[in-house]
Length: 604
Image (tube, rainbow, N blue to C red; front, side, top):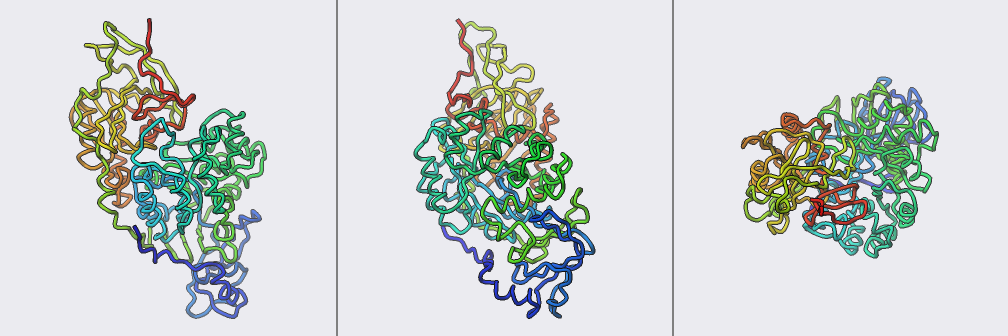
C-alpha cells in the first residue's frame, strides 16, 4: 500500500548548504533567529551565554554572539530572554504502540515535552499485522512535524517455537524494509539465544541491516555475562536496553555497545546503571537515555524524555552529561550526528528553550525551525493516515468464552497442588519463577492469597485456544478480572483474575469492542480503554486515552493491586524472551532454559 508522504519532505543539508552559507556569511537574511540565549553545546559540554541561532530552511545556519548581521525585515525573531537553548530531546529506543496511540497522536503527546526525535521499533504491530502493519506505522511516522525514524522489527515471533504470532517477519522482509525512506536500522534483536547459537535467519537479518549501513538494535535479557553474552555481541547488535544493574551497563560499554538505560512507565533502570558514569567515571558518550515503554497516562501526566533527563539528574548525573545522553549520544549511535542532536550548523533546527537545566521546564519547542509547542501546548498539526479496516478488525478469538474455558483441573483425588507460578517484580521487566501450594475444589485448582489465575486467549486465527496458568504479585482481591489485547510480543489476549466468570466476561468484552483493556468486578465493568487499531492503539487524542487509562489504573487499585504501573507488568506476561517465567499460546515457558514446563508439579 502506498501513502502520500509529501508533508514529510525536508531538504537535505547538501541541498540547503548554499543558502546556509549565504546566511552565515551575512549575505542573506535568516528565516528565523532565536536571540539572546545560553547555548548548550553538547559537543564540548559548555553553556555559553549571549548567543543567537540563525535558521534557514529549517536548518541551523550559524550560532553566533550577534546574528543581527543576518537578520532581515522578514526574519522571525524568537526571544530567548537569557534562557538555555538545548537540542531537541531524542528517545533512543521506544515502542509507539506502548503509548496506546498511533504515531500521530503519540507525536502530539510528546512534542510539548520537548521530544523532537524518536527511534521506534513497531514490533508490536508486526506481530498482529505483519509487514503491512510496519509500513502503516512507518508512513504515518514520516508525516509528523518531528523526526520519527523506524527500526524494522527483527523478531516476530520473538522466540520461534515458543509462541505463535499473527504474522512472521522473514529475512526477506527485513532486506525489503531497508530500502524504505524512514528505516534507520533493525529493531531490538530479542532472539538472543538464536544469535548466540548462530541461527541462520537471525544472522541474515543482521547482515541485511549491516549491508545497508544501518544500526542493529540489541536486546540481551539475561544476567549471564559469560560466553553467551560474548557470542551475542559478536553477532552484531550495537546497543542494549535490557540491563538492570551497573555491571550490565559496564559490560555492554566495554564490549563496544551503547548501553541504553531506560525509564518507562514501569521500568526504572536508570538509577541502578548510571553509577557507571557518576561513580565509576566511565566515558558517558557510550550511554544513552530512552523510555522503551510509556503508556498514555505517563505521557500526559508525567512527560516523556524530559522526565528521563530529570530523573538522571536527580540520580546524580551532571545536567550537561544527561543532556548528551538524550541528544548527541543518540544521534551519533544511529549515524545521524551531522543531522540531529546538537545546535550546530547544518543540523535540523530542533531547539528547546528552558529556564533551568535541572528541573527542565519545556517552555518553547522548535522543530525544523518552526515553533511546534509553547508552554506545554501543542501548536503544530500532526497528520493522520486513514487506517484501513483490516487494521481495525484483529480480535478473532472464535466462540465466546465461558468460565469452563479457564478451568485448571487437578489430578484425581487431590485436595491441593503445587503450581509453577509467574512472579511479578515491581518496576522491572523480569519475572520470578515461583512455586505455590494451591487448593483444589471439585477437581479444579483455585486461586489463593496473592496468586491469581492467568490465561492467554488466542486472538489471531480464531483457534479457540486458551492457555491457563498462575501469576502472583498483583495482590488482587474479590471477584475480578482484567483482560488486555496488549500482550507483548505476540499480542494475543492476556486475562488475569481471581474468578473464572469475571475472566470470561472480560475476554468477551474485548472481542466485542475490537481490542483494548477492560476490568470487571462482580459482573460490572469498572474500566474500558478501547484500542481498535490492531488491538494495540487508539487514534483518539492522547488526553482522552490517558483519561481512560487513568480510570483503568484506579480500577486496578480498587481491586487490590498495589504495584506501581502494574498495567505494564500485565502487558508483558507473555513476553517469552525475558526471564524467568512467561505464558504463551503453547504453554508455560521457562525463559532461563527456553523450555516449556508444566503448570502443576507432578508428585508421586
